[in-house]
Length: 145
Picture 1 (cartoon, rainbow, N blue to C red):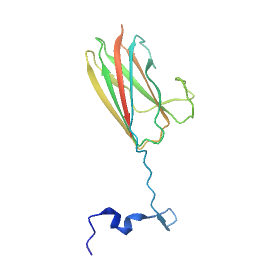
Picture 2 (picture 1 turned 180 degrees about the horizontal axis):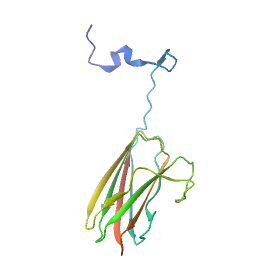
Picture 3 (picture 1 turned 135 degrees about the vertical axis):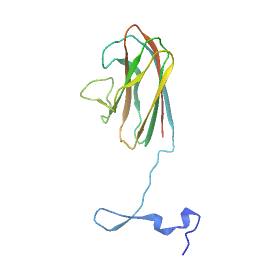
Picture 4 (picture 1 turned 45 degrees about the vertical axis):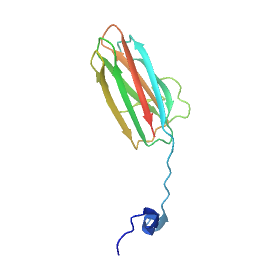
């Protein structure tokens, strides 16, 4: 028997086995809304965790998060992405925020970097950065869906 090209007509797609081996109805939930945010700051902090570039942004229910980091300064910059499962984490504090992934380095003069976070349940994202010396104009773009 050939499968119909229309997914809605394929009855077996409606069911999934649960952990006990029983059959359950498949339920898919999506957020149907894309969230976009941008943070820009001139950073002069030379030590970790640095200063805020993108303030705490709620991403609850988003399955994919993309972050683009832009260094518009003349010195190297290091970005740190923090995530939190706390309902209202506020500004950075070690008991409310955890770094997601490694440090992201952007060399001087308009270098960019990109980081994707997928399937990691997180409620809030916060981005800090620090520079090697002097100061730099830094930008972070966030898109989540």
